[in-house]
Every structure is written in C-alpha cells, then in structure tokens.
Amino acid sequence: SNGAQIVGLAAAGTGIILFSLASFAATSKKDFSFMSKFLLIGIVLLIVASLANIFLQIPAMTLALSGVGVILFSAFILYDVSRIVNGGETNYIMATLSLYMSIYNLFTSLLQLLMGLMGSDD
View 1 (tube, one colour):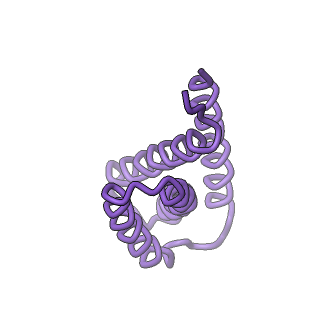
View 2 (view 1 turned 120 degrees about the horizontal axis):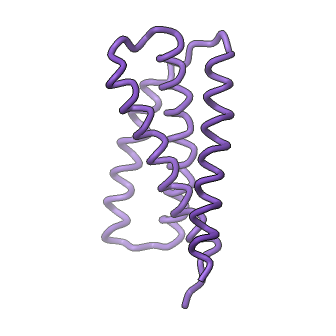
C-alpha cells in the first residue's frame, strides 16, 4: 500500500546522491580514476553474492547486498563523473551510458533496500 511512497523516496534519494556526488566530483581537484580496481572487484563480488543469494534466499543477505549496491554504485557515479570532468573518457556515448547505468543501478539498489525496510508484508 505504500509502494508509491517507497518509489518516490528511492527516486529522491537517488537524485540527492547523484547531485551531491556529481557536484563533489566536478568541483574537487581530485582524480577518482584510482578507484577502478576497487570498483571492478566490488562489482564482481556483488554479482557472485547475488547469484548465490538466488539459491540461498536469505532476506538479511538481500538487504546487505542492496546496501553494498548503494555504496558501490554511488562510488561508480563519483568515478564516472570524475572521468568525464577530468578528460579521462573521450568516448562520450560510453561515458553517458556508464553514468546512466550507475544511476539506474543506484536507484534499483536503493529501491530494493527501502522495500526491504519499509515494505508491508501483506
């Protein structure tokens, strides 16, 4: 019954995180390209753990993976915007697609987390 509220909250949270991290990456003099190895390892571990959870179906693990996803995809936004601003990405179509996928994955992770925490069981 509170599905619309959860979706709105996830959208607002995604917007706030995106605006904050994109502003920080754009105004900061720091280059966040050093995060690439951490992000690659993180995404591989998240995929493996998510596949394991398909078979195990542990609710607490689902919440934990959603929380890790929010953190990981927030870091991806920081990384993507930093590469765009600092000129590390010259293929603008790939840069846009990468940023879009980071935003989409952040939204779905945040939505899944909020559904687990606020969703009704009926």
